[in-house]
Length: 263
Ligand code: 6GU
Image (cartoon, rainbow, N blue to C red; front, top):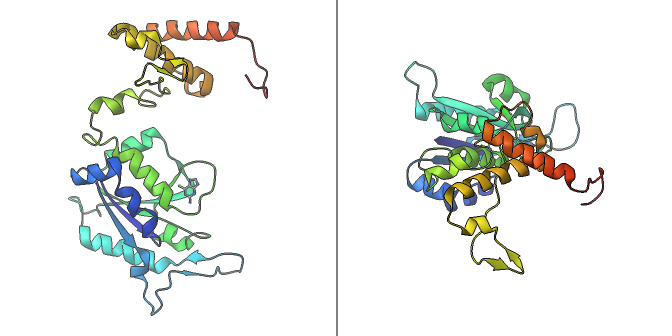
């Protein structure tokens, strides 16, 4: 996966890329992230990258031309794809975008073109960037952030970990939350007792099949209780259906809690 982040605040992103799994992915050559300061593509003595909005109002708007120039520079540098199209996929993090999901992350992880993130800040970006570059607008959810830098990192993180070889154990990505549209089962590590809280017996049993079923049941239970929407319209195999029936029966028997009350 090859990415470029275009931002007025490179220091918001570079430290994160130099840590942990994203750092190792880059060292292994599985991930490349180049961070460019949009200020380097300004064209006046004072390197002005933003200006007051036409029509008045609060805040500043990012100027269009430095962004066009930065993308032109990338096109120049990376050239054309085999079919003559430019080998860039331009993404713009914005609350107006298409919702970012695990499927979206999988799609980016398999992308052969460079992923270029245009990070807006302040009150936004001059509309002509959207009109001229037609970026793919992507949103993390229905809330507002101060800029596109944190979303760009979130998106790169979610996609990079799906690139084969990025996670140490190839099983880790396959087995966890959302790989299967279920929430994770609980994990425990040593010691067997912490502050009077013990580890479920089955996990100490060494009985692999019993452990597998326990984990499956807990994943289904957690999803049923916390995110029932993920189970809607889903077709279950026989085992999952049986586990889910048990869970539904058990939770119906437990003292019902009315909406707004604590358990
Ligand atoms: Cl992707 N960008 C910004 N700036 N704010 C957001 C967002 C993205 N997703 C939710 N809020």
